[in-house]
Length: 110
Image (cartoon, rainbow, N blue to C red):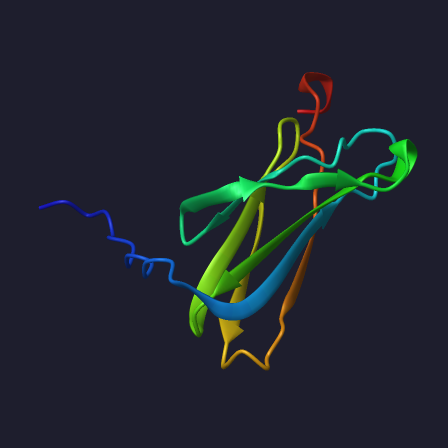
């Protein structure tokens, strides 16, 4: 028998009337270009647009979803993935997800 555990499948992404704002930024100046890939429940939803001055870049993406629970994950080259769960209870509920991008350690730091 396999001793590995199965992960529960994430529900499918349902587009709807609940607005979600996803932002990603890095506390490390001059190392982040503001572009991250946003996925929800494992489904690629797009790439953020870069915002802000060059030394304080951040990325933002607006998505409208149906009520439910979702896992939001962002990925960018050279940074650790960041994720957060969000629950929509109705279109009046307007969650805002702000994720911090942490640079991956360099080879010399490992």
